[in-house]
Image (tube, rainbow, N blue to C red; front, side, top):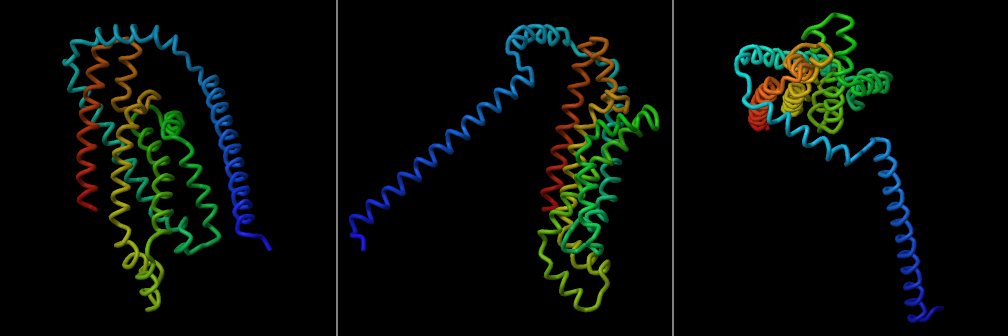
Length: 271
């Protein structure tokens, strides 16, 4: 039988051992993190010297960009409209494909449980390939132009949207769903009347987010020939026409900011 003093000493010993183990774990983690970033900096070829010598060159380009060229603004606005249209159509196609796919990828409501994991793997594959890569592939398949960008956006956004939809459905309250099912209603009818109204605001908000995101992402698809304002951006860079480039960037910033505000306002209304 230990005395209170002995128990106190044992508790202190265990506490000291715990502190020692925690210190060792802390230093092991610290060494791992430092080693990771040392290797990452080497692999990323981070060179502050190159940055120091490149900044004056960048400043000279900025000086050459003024005044901006305004004679081609109508063309730039047309190309920007193409970019917004690409994002809108691609996001819409992706959403229409994502809704039924999300049902298959939701463990709690899928009518075909055996397709749960294959559907999830398929969506992960779509998410893992960027819209830029998809657009590059479709330029080779359907030719240059915005249509390739629409297809690239649609496939990547399909995987991402369906994953978000499925995750939200799996976390949704299924009380109304189960209640309607007990009345003998079919699965599709139950989903439409008991589940969709509950998750619809979140689904619409997610769709707006992806449309806003795709407008920004679409600005670079023109680099691979997928049309939109990105094509004019690439042409200006190739020609080192910095005043034209500055005008294009300014228009992109204005349009993206306006769409961001519109999207936020719509999401607040949906919330």
